[in-house]
Image (cartoon, one colour):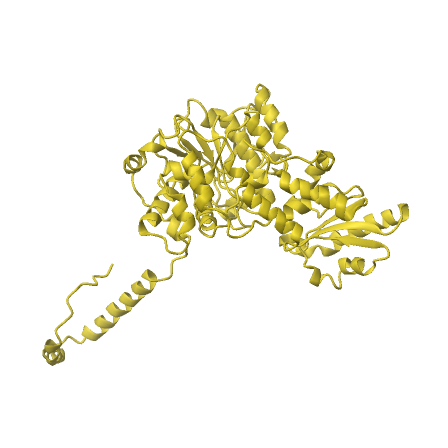
Length: 516
C-alpha cells in the first residue's frame, strides 16, 4: 500500500523549499490539509486491527482453474470416495440434531460423512429460519472453519464421535465416516500436526495453506470442478425431502406478506428431493466433497424448517437408519459413569430436576420452571416416604441458590436430599481424562494412505484442556430417575433426556468401549 522504500528528501533542500512557499497559490494549504486528512483516514481504515478469525477466512478469489491445478489430488487421493461436510452451530443439543441429519443425508447420497468437532456453545449462530434471517451457507461454513482452526490451535478439539457412540452405525455399514482433521490433512495436503503444535508462532506458509483450504472447503470461490460442490440452498428457500411428494412443489410455510414488505423478502420455499437434486446425474454428484451449510431443522407451522425426511417408502435401508438415529447414545465412558452414579451414589429412587434458568429466554421464566417442580414434589410427598431424593441439573451456580426455591429445598434436609455435580468434581474430571485418552473419533476404519495422517493427529493434536463432559453425564443420570423427570419447557437438553428415557438407556447393561 505504501512504498516504505521511497527516498527521503534531502535536508539541504528544506531551506530552498521554504523560500518558495511565499509564491504558493492561496489554495495550496487547504489542499494540503484535505490531502492529509484523506491520507490519515485511509491509514486508519487500513490499520484497524483484524480479528483473528479473518486470518483463516479471507478468500483468495482465485479462479476455478487455478484451484483445480492447486488441489489436483482432491479428485483422486481417496480412490473415488466421495464425502459430505456441513456446518454445525449453536449449543450441543442442536449440534447433535444436525449430526443426525448429516448422517442421514450422507447415507442417502452414498457419501462418507466428515465428522466435525463439538463447537463451543453458541460460538457459531445460524439466525432465525421462521423470520427468514439467517447466515448464508457460505457464511456459516466460513464461521465454522474459523472456529475449528481455533479449537485445533488451542488444543481443545473434541470430535462429535468422541462423545456420541456411532459404532453400531459403522459396523452395520449404514454410514461411513472420517474425522475432520484426518480428511483435511489429506484433501488439502495440510500439515495438521503443525496447526496443532505451533501455538502463536504460525509460519506464513501454514497461514497461507489454512487460507487456501478454508477458502476451498467453505466454497468462497464457488464450485471447483470434480472437487467441491457447495450447497447454497438454505431454510429460506428449500425443504429437503426424500421419496415424499412432488419434487419442486411449494412448501406449506411461506413468508407472510407483511414480512415480505418489511424485510423486502422475495424468497419462495420449495420442497426438493435431496437424491434427485444432489445425487446421481446431478452437477453435485461428481464432486469429491458436497458441502452443506446448516443442517438444523425443527417443526414449524405444519412443516419442517429445512429437512423433512421422516421415512423412505421405497428404501428399507434408509428407513432402518432413520429408526437408529432417533437415539444415539453417549460413548461407554459417559454412560457407565452416569449409571454408576445413580446406583452407587444416590442409591435410591430419585427425581431428576432439569432447571435451565440463566440462558436465553429461560431466565425470564423462573416462576413457571419452579412451579412444575413444586407440584411434582408435592405429589411425591403425599404418595411416599421422606426424604425425597432429587438430582438437580441446573445452570444456576449453587452460590446463587439462596432466595430461590432451590435454596429452600437445600435447607429442608428432613424432607429432601439433593444431589448435583460440578465440572471440577473428581468423577467428572476422571471421565474427561478417559475420553481424552480413548479418542473414539479416530478409531474409524481408515482409507488407504490415511494411517499416517491419523498417527500425526494422535501425536500432535492431543488435548491440553480436558473436554467439558458435565452435561453428558448429567443427562445420563437423569435418564435413570425412576421417580420421574421435571423438565424446563422449550429446552433442547430436556428433549434429549426424554429420548434417552424413552429408549431405556439406564436399563441397558453397562457397555465396554468400542473399537473399530
